Length: 196
Image (cartoon, rainbow, N blue to C red; front, side):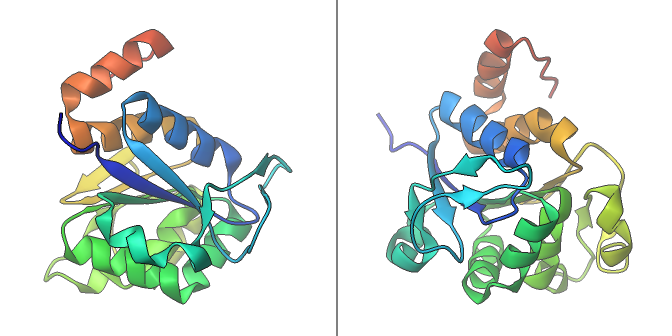
C-alpha cells in the first residue's frame, strides 16, 4: 500500500474551532494523516475563538524538520488566530514553499489573510482566484481575483468562506489529495452531498 497523504493544520489561540476540527475530522476519515501544529504556543492547548480548547499534536517550534514531507497545509480562520498565523514568519515561509512546490495550500475564512501575507498572489503572472469570510474581503480583493463562491480552487490553492462551508472545503481537499471517489465515500455516512 502506498504511503498515505499527509496534511498540516495550523492552530493558534483564536482559531475558529469548527473550521479546524471539521477539516481535521474529514481528512482523517479519508485516511489522510493530519498533523495539528500549534503556532506561537509551546505546550498545552490553544484556546479557540469560542473558548473550545484544542491540544495540538505538535508545536511548530518543535516540528520544522518534517514539514517538507507533507502534501498539504491548511489555515483555519478566526480573527485572532488568522492574525497570529499571518504574522508568523515560519507559517508564511511554509505556505509560500508549499505553493511553489505545487502542494495543496488551503485556507478558510480569515485564514486567507495568511495566504496574502505569504505573498502567494505575487508568484504568478495572473492573480490567483480566492475567497474568504466577507468581513475580510476588502483586505483581499485587490490582491486576488476575488470570488464569492463557497469554495474556490485555483491550481493548488483552495479557499473557502467560513464555518458554514467547512464540510465542502474539507471534502474538496480530500478530492485533491486522494480523489473524488474517496470524497464521496467519506461524505455519504456523514449525510452530505458531494458533487464533483
